Length: 425
Image (cartoon, one colour):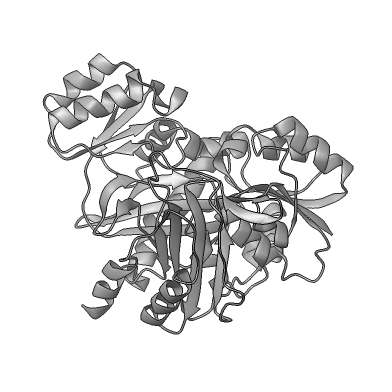
């Protein structure tokens, strides 16, 4: 069977490596892919992940038996709808269901209507209205661009002056484009954060191993928000008791709400959760695999990934037992110096000749230039290690990260520190 994976980052590399384990898979095409993915799939760099017409034409002419649409943008643009229209089975939600991420307003209104626990919020479509509201607000507070913003459309001002600047950045300067035409302003929640990705066919749900993301650019959770500087799994704050509460009050009610709204969700539904003193609450939904959460979650999956994805598409997930390894995983992101701000590209990448069996390097922001890998993005590589304990996985991931080099290489040195502290409590 020939597969097509839409996307070209570390998440897609992790998906492709896992799909390759199925012996029925012949060729995997990555649109556009990247320099490192080219070792595991046939990359088509001239087709962007958002060029839906070209993706559909390619799929029709290459005997694609199954497609995986991984990033948020093509999902929101209806890539799955278009591929289904020409008879190609897909993993991923249709455009109506993808609104759960593509519009923060849709998601917040859904939670309010169906009594799914989340932060209190208000929606504004004009900067002056937002600023008037903020004059009487308590700080810190959370301000979110309504639409997709590469994981960076969330600002947390700690004073009115910072909030004023945030509104200007999002709504007037349009730092995130049209995604900033509306903003959601919501209360600041406190507690441990947990990411839970879940396979769902619209009715049945199979949560994946929990994880802990590290969004801030600098050690000690300082600096600007990024797409994610590292992850660990499982998240020690997410106990079996909390998981059951989330299933009863968040996961199943969300699926029921989407069905009731006429847009059942099929694919990977990402729950960004805050474990507050008042119980678990939803910070955000994503309509796809998280990045870099995927890079620690999929290495722990025992069940064949393609089999799970096909069960989601065929709405038979409830008949499948999805199994996970009893182990830990850690991913350390190697970024370009300056990320998430300005950074230089085209830096030669030096990789080790071999890696330990428990270590994988996922390629995110690189390309091939004259047969050699060079940097092409902010998050360049994700170094993932698995191990019997989180401490061992982290030690092996950091040791492997030291064997990789490129000019301006930047990484956080405290990935997993909060998780280790939680384990010690």
